[in-house]
Each structure stands twice: as C-alpha cells, then as structure tokens.
Length: 80
Image (cartoon, rainbow, N blue to C red; front, side, top):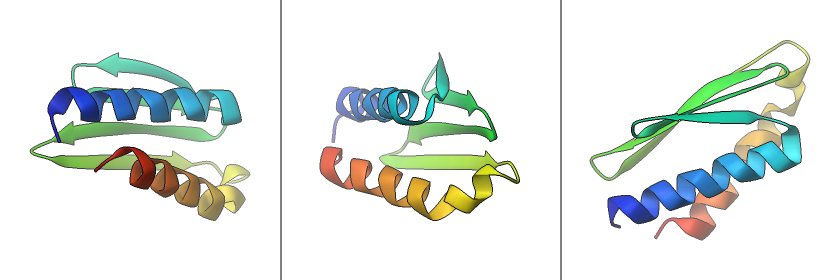
C-alpha cells in the first residue's frame, strides 16, 4: 500500500478517535501523537508497518478492550 494511502488511513483513524473519544491529534512527520483525558500515545508508519502505541490512565484502562477493537476494526477496513 502506498505511503500516502497509509497516511490517509492514519489521519482517518485519528479523526475518528477525536470524534468518538475527544482525543486530540498532532502530526510530526510520519507520526501522529494522540492525547486526551487518560489517553496518551502515537501512531506511526514505516517500512509498510503501522505501529500504534497508547498509554491509558487508570480510569480509561477499563475501556482498553473497546479501544483496541475499534482501532483494529478501523485498520482492517482501511488498510489493504
């Protein structure tokens, strides 16, 4: 998949997390940093791989499974 398409999918994921969970995002090169109430992480892509790393606070950690499934579903639908 071309880098531009992967970036577009990453932007869509960041936008979706913003709408659904109030997470803010900021791009730094090929990395998008995400931050919200109890959520801090980044999404990067390189060499055909997408790396999602998120730290959850104590209260948001109870939603880990839901967030993990949502991110996986989004990537499955938009990355080929």
